[in-house]
Length: 310
Image (cartoon, rainbow, N blue to C red; front, top):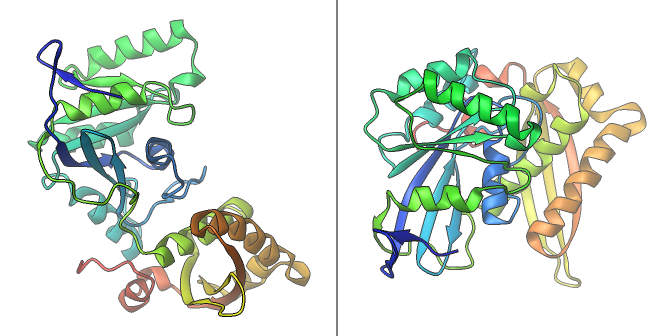
């Protein structure tokens, strides 16, 4: 894709910048970024509050580089982990070049969305609205909802109806972002799609599979720590050892499952994604440990990588 400014004049100067992707939980922010960069970097789940850290996804084209920051969903904080997530999401807004606000146009604009829109009124950074999940609506219904959005939020006049899942209009979204970026350096090498350490992404992939398989009341009480990653010298195989933390003894049994079947399923699903990430065979061993109320423990949160000092 190329970009144009000032009519048909092609700007060949290299552009770069940082873009915060924000929105309430479960509107498709992580799916949007995974589709844009063409790789699975941020985990995806139908459960809210999936993303917990700021994850940098790097999109490099011939004439530009966009560093996306996938933020946790903005929601009402209920514990120290939630406080960390909300602080992580909102602290980027004055530090980036562009904000992409993702709204679920199929589900409709709710109270949580309105709270975020109100918060953005005090932010000077340009805002582009991605009206996501447009593929779920008929053309007629989509037009009606866009018109309703334009009428109610007439201060947000820069918007694109997209489908993060199908990739619809993401090139248009890129073009809108580029209009707000200046000439700048290439911050990351061409083949680099994230600045997150491998062990962070691996831990997130394991947590994603737990989110997929476990019942509603358990997933938010799960944290994953990678305790060891070792490459075998005698064969192309990487040994990975990880600990899944839960808050209650009763949850430990559920995560392990009858005869260890649930833990085995989590491991099997995670191993496939990890092998795709690393490009090699993986031996994955999972353990489950109880750390009561870890989401309210500053020490436990920092041990698991949720450190607001950074």
